[in-house]
Image 1 (cartoon, one colour):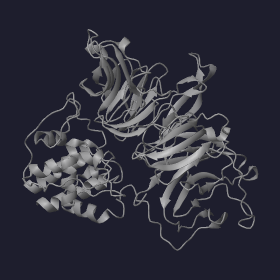
Image 2: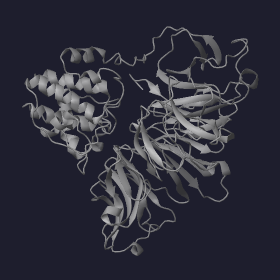
Image 3: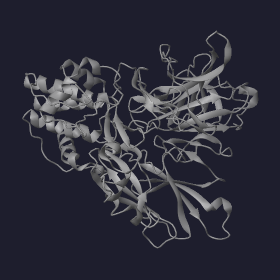
Image 4: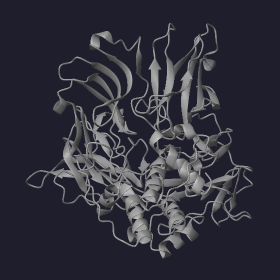
Length: 631
């Protein structure tokens, strides 16, 4: 949590009656909502989220606030051709954190929610800069400006990952709506499973039109097998109950789970693999204990995210079948990291049920008997259940969890559905003037303290305090394009990093890059220049994925090639990080070079965190460091 602002990502909707009493001596009456919840070394601010009149937050949300937007709905009257009222229809929109809606007034069929039934609602979350919408018949995609970028034409939409989305019928598309992989075009018979991520997608089916090879595993966008769980002459020879099978279909943070059914036991073991198919960790409890499920923090307990690794962590449900064992001890949920270390354990349903993987030190308790609505990994209450009917008219709903970038974001809303609060988690001690609930004393007090918060919030056009000096120096040196001189804490895209690299190269070399190489999904001159120099490569099938977030290992590889293109060879060194094994083979040498040269540093715990996004301010700082080496 050091040096960054933590947002809470919405995953669970919990309707909880809050009942922890607050000492009467603290205040005569409790406020409807304190400004701050102060914990031990962490505080949570509660800021009202403005929702335009008539709109309510869509109760089918999964992560709720994603990439700065909340899904909202309202009923609108319907009139016939003569202007007579014929009923109402439910329409949808998205509101940003300032309360602004998109303008769909010129749409013939504006977005509307899609429900399978009352218990199965479609989720609408921005991901990778796009969100799918439903026009009453088909699904399309809009961008974060509310523009329709892909017309409604799909029956089975999915979130974009790494610039690619699975839209069903064996088809993967890019952000322009162009098909990048199609089973129909190849004449193959099979099923694309889950979402494309980390350069791979899960596939079960034949790899040829003649049905000579049946395959279970992961392919790249060229249809080439990368990880094989099974390959044989026919589908009939494969038995998922006796062979390897998918435990997770979508890779997350470079990991996926494989279900191993090859042993003699009654239940399978599970193997955590990386994107090369290497075994990282094996989970194989001894009978009478078996694994009831593996699930992730992004969509806690949801079948849409089984086994998903978030923040290097995941949950394992162990079930004990010993005869006569107490019911409350039969099921244990264990939070583990990718190295197999146990971090947190609870018995369900009696003790605790938790949402999220404590990536930022807090998670949600779904158990009413636990004092903490939001707790830390030591089960201490950061936000307690202290509201009563007399204060706010009943219980509150909390929707809280973890996004794929492992930052946090949450909403606390009144049961009347017209008041919403954004929760933001910060390190340190709150020193402002707002009303504070103090977890240590269980009292409400007026704000003010002696310790400055360690995590001040940067404005939209200012970098974080620790980055300001170097960002300013880079701008003065002419290394930062105007378009990158804002939103410093947001992840940089692949095309934005190219723009930064072009500025660096042309500033150092004193000449414009004349080489060009093209891609089918972008005409960005900066991308073409970097590709022409051989500094960047595509993602396959002639694509570059310009809007995809650049990862730390990709940034290291690009900077290494950029240094070489400028005639500067960096010293080789093996990466000296505890997670060096997680670095992709193509980037390992570059990461070592960046570390040796002091261009890129690691993160907390002497890790490099290769798959995480790289922000604009981090990109600018490393460009400056390389500039100071090669100029």
